[in-house]
Image 1 (cartoon, rainbow, N blue to C red):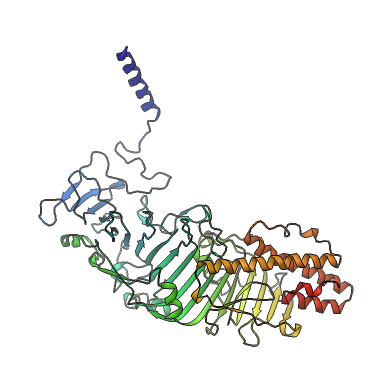
Image 2 (cartoon, helix red, strand yellow; image 1 turned 30 degrees about the vertical axis):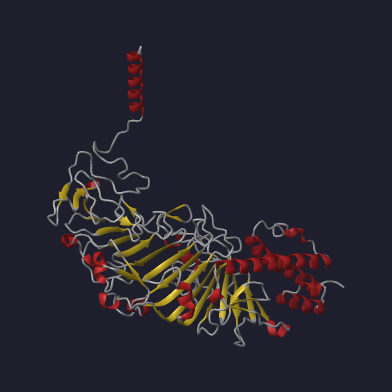
Length: 584
């Protein structure tokens, strides 16, 4: 009986094996080689392949594994922590180093190094060095030097497409679930150049890009991007060569991006609402030193590297999470401040709410000299403001004329309206052009130079001419507002600021409805705007509901030839005081 049961079990197992049997591309190929699904790991050598174990320092134990991955690409694993054993097919991703010869020319041109900095048995750092296949005098962007720091201990680092053997640090799932570790509290340093073209490898261009997770939900609520720009980037007239790509140890460009309403979530991992940016002389960060450990393997392995210097690093120099914000405001010397607000709430990546240029408000398209000149700018939907001499010191204010946040000291600003997020820019603008042909525009100007906008111009029909001009001084509206100094802000201060704006706008909108109905307007036309299910909707719909009712009342008073009520309406709307228009 037992024999019969065993025979039945074996037969069932054979049937199951047959049922799940697949036809491999080659008899010994790793299952996920060149499939149309994500290749998250380096494929091991084909079954039956015998790696070569190298004792580089003559101590009788292997220091390296010389092997191949799929497509017969040569790989070399270096043991940098002394735990490699004969029979291993790969090194570890704690302290070891992987070298890949992608074009099989005898030079390892893709290198990945892991390091456990705190000795807890888990990697805290991953360094990727990528080199061009052919020598070139053009430094940027031929190669990569990128370091990811796992400060939130989730073991997520960079992403390499192991089908193509390319660093793909911008790949993502959905709108913005990036494969590299950009979510939570984390950081990276990056330069689009190979290490042999960089002078001091302790420094970097994006040095660093910091991601903050103050509510500890595994998502990013703030991001601070700090750039140490080499001479070539400061002056594009300089040749793109090594001599003009060396780093200075000085941060000269900063952006602070904030998710004001903390509405990020899985599926919408990045939802930054505004950015405050600084440019100028900046600050020296050469005293921001961070020691390294477990970078150095056996010196005899240096010969395998195009440039072994990063293996010899004992420290990195960068501003960290705890000090960056204060250094920006206390040490930085800035000559210009930029402000961008994502009014259509469609920015799924930090850069998308970083770049609006103080150029032509109506020209559309990448590198065409307009508001969205930058390749990563939103073509429509963002509001940009520029303080070209830093007269306002990066301070902000909430205006009376629209209840929104503005940059104090800005000489002018532009809002290119995408009211219904029709030109959803999320990710693909670099590759798939979809720019608006017709859009409404609002321009703001500080005519009297007191740091506050006092002139608002509207082009609502999209003909590239401002048909309406509002002069606050002529209306008797004081443009001065309470200043908001964000230099001492922490994340909770930003969310309180957004709460304050949204609640005020929504309360004013309810007052506007009462006033409009008091003058006989049928406000049910705007039922969609009268329902707000979130903080962001109160902000968005609170503004628009007021604006529609203002214009409808304007239309009625014009028809009735009530110049007195028109004057009261304009002052009430642009001062945010609807009660002053209420019928007695």
